[in-house]
Image (cartoon, rainbow, N blue to C red; front, side):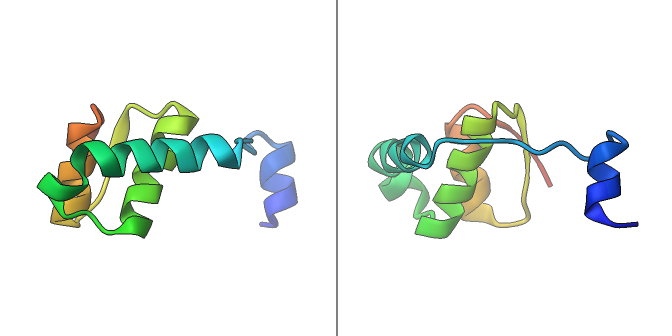
Length: 78
């Protein structure tokens, strides 16, 4: 099934975001929790995206990323 039909059928939803806000959130996460979690930059960016989208849960199998997500207040699923 094409993604356009998945969008039109309501199976998928196109989310919009403001990149400067995402980068600001990632920077704040890095400043607050980067040293204690040793989370890598792209993993931190993924956590920031989850926050900016308003997600409450975060799924990862990466220990450092799970520490960052948890420190950011997300419920970590693994």
